[in-house]
Length: 204
Image (cartoon, rainbow, N blue to C red; front, side):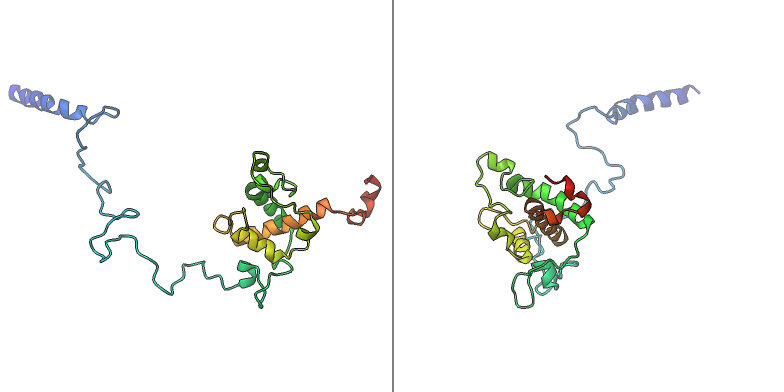
């Protein structure tokens, strides 16, 4: 019995300093002891890392020529480029306009476009107030005559001081912005005939 107590005492004496290193929040310069390492130490390549396997020593590999990523085969030229079969900008959007589409376009417009173009499309966005070159108003005769495909192309590829938004905004959202773009133009150039008959007596 006495020897058992001695063994237990010696065991606790040895285990105490070892267990103290397992307490959370206790800093230590020693590397952790991994009883079960799981994925702590895993062979892998990091972005821009070096590889001794390939002749060019680059771990990141270029796409195989002729391959297209899933979902990136944009064969519908009208939808993805805004062009007709002759390569000209589409006069009208290929997307059916609904209230849901307009609301989506308004949301995306307010996020991506209004900082420069303003919420009304008048070219008086907040960055213009801080010295950025003002873009043209949407409500001039020239801009109102531009085809929908041209507006889509400008959003996609940019023009002059405007950067391209194709990488940030999916094609479906770009067409939604085009639809809201037209709604903004209509709202600022509306005539009495555009107002429902039952509400025309309220227009002054």
